[in-house]
Length: 64
Image (cartoon, helix red, strand yellow):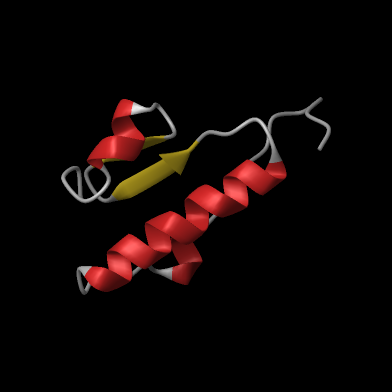
């Protein structure tokens, strides 16, 4: 997982913990772009996600 997402990790867009991917962005649009890129890369590498583990958590006070 780290190798697949290495550039996004280096740019501090995502953090990977074993099989969990945390996405940190400042805008909803930026968040959606990163999610699309992650899903594309997972598919290209025959990996998948469990929808029941997908949670969008937002800090209070953030306005998009």
